[in-house]
Image 1 (cartoon, rainbow, N blue to C red):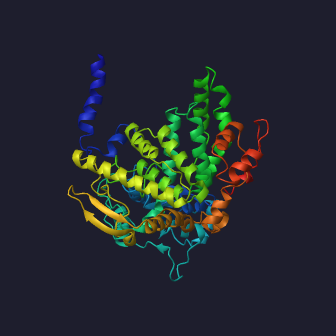
Image 2: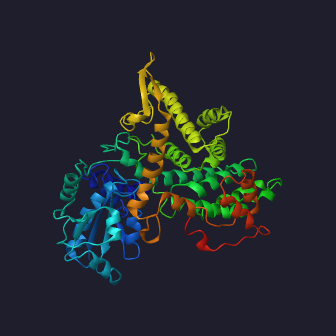
Image 3: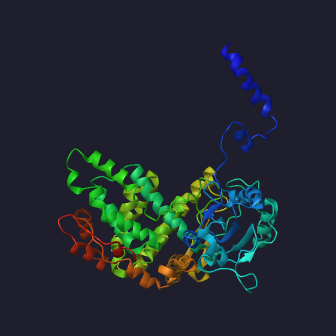
Length: 515
């Protein structure tokens, strides 16, 4: 028998046996023996429930309570999964809006958790803000509860119809990523900036992933990275990123020893550091999530990382003390110059850094310089994008903040002959706006999700910042870089230097718990 005659039945099966399956359907993959896609809904239990929902960036949550022995629950799972694939994960059409989870109440570990939410039948669906699930429970007769029972979600179509009615949205089971978007209007909704905290975490991870993947830590870039890490430890808006940055800084000399650079084993030292970094989680184990929320564009290739990095830089600029501003300015300029991989972008940014001829003595001076620089970048990119048609139509580059966000920021607004806008700014009002927008409003998501302290302890931003300079020890090489930046970051650098001993340092985990 010839090889062709053996293979012919398989060809006929592909030609005719699969012809009835719609093109692009997952059924084709299953027909060819490919496994079903992984579950999109997140399985939670009593140990993970509160943490996952408390830390979720989503605005809403749906939790299905079921029992694995229940036939109706097994039959309902495919219906629930169809909706979960729209909202959960990096490949979802609308990630970061609704987190969809499930709890198996038939497991003994979950009995008390299911009692907390008065589970009386299977499957049962509850809807509400994720933080409300994490901090409390549900009673069917309780009035004015933010957690609601979904009374009509027996099929995927009916569940999605319930969601659309509740949210005033138009999501569809046929939605594909970056199509039919219901994007938030960031420019006109100041409350959206609170959700940007999660994009700042994503951008922080992305920045360091690029640095390590491209092996960008060399003898000449080592100190700039140390100074930027120091800035993150002191002033990153996310506690998780502050803690992760501190852990990298603590181990910096072991990852990239300064005494190896002059020797011909620099390459090996670099690789060692890159490989070892994989064990660090700079912003926690849930980062990266693989998608953007506040910084999400209407196209896959727009906004995202660059937007998240700008928000990070602005949030750092308004959290500084007056005496720290110029050192922070230098650290940010050097970081962009050495580690931002877009060559033209970093060249333009560093040219603007080089035009500064006087030290920034106050927080307002540096924050306003960064704001003005961002507007100049937007003006330049707007012209390029309009001529090439590469901009995001839903998020065109603009002078910022727009008048609807900050009317008091504008003294006058005129149109120039070339079509651009000429604004006379009220700088005092602009700075006040920056502090409120990138300071208080950005950090408000901590309060909304109970992340300010253990047990949801809400503290002021000042207190939160003070704990970020808790006593930790730093290796000699890192401390030397910090010393070059003087004592401007106060107790942080001084305490670090005071705890050095023979390049072998020890620290207790509790020294980092409040960072």
